[in-house]
Length: 387
Image 1: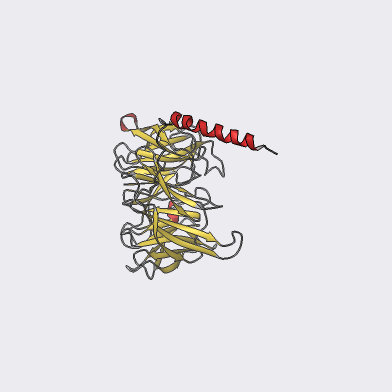
Image 2: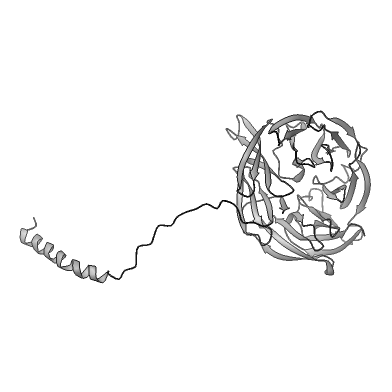
């Protein structure tokens, strides 16, 4: 038991020390004011690039980066196995997403999500038939009509078809059966699209102005699906629809008529001594102002190497049918290019899970120079550039 005299002495001692303690802390700094957290109303202005960080085991992301220096601006969240589409003016993004109630079983919900890029927010969504293709991200799996009114969604159940969506009205218009064909390549005018078929032909569909009805025409075979199949991404080279084949041919098509017609087939590897072939996902990009095609290439190709990442990126002069320069670049699987005399290339690097910027030099036959990289923020197969 503590005695009363001891407690009294302890109390007096404590009291006597308080003034000294207060004196010592008289000059202490003012307490730090609490930080006020705010949210930016919009991302920083300037041109953007977009990458589809597609996930198969959780939320996907449409990531937004500065096209000038790859500063990260933010992301727009999406569902499983998301596909990405960016409007030509870069202000609106579209994402086709899958949502599974029980992951391995149960109901599946497919939606088309519409985002405001400036605020990185969903403005609306449109329910889709539960048929959308759950596959890696490629440009021809989510496409838009020339005027932006309609969006086309690739389906696979595994039967193939295309869902036509009126994004202005916010509703699904129809499902167009496309048996044996895959990929969506909208026409430059009107509301038609073509699709690549397993026998080497293309099927073309002409839709009405309201997105309804659809007349079908089938072309002659324009590529050999057994000996020299095409990569599924198609790009515009001028007004022509262009594809790269597994063996390194550039095929150009006229899709302005009732059915697709072959314009030309040229090899970009004919003058190369060693064996090289294209490889990757969205593996080539075209710059109209420069008239240069950039293609990711790998050496010693074999049956099944068509998705191998780059060892080099070739700059191919379309009008002169000539490979101008072969820049050593490891790991690139997808490309996007600006429309300039000296194009800037944006690339997905599979090895590092990063985005890369490359400048090109027209005076040096479009040799590429690495300018910047992002940190790793998830694996992607698609990169798009917008104003």
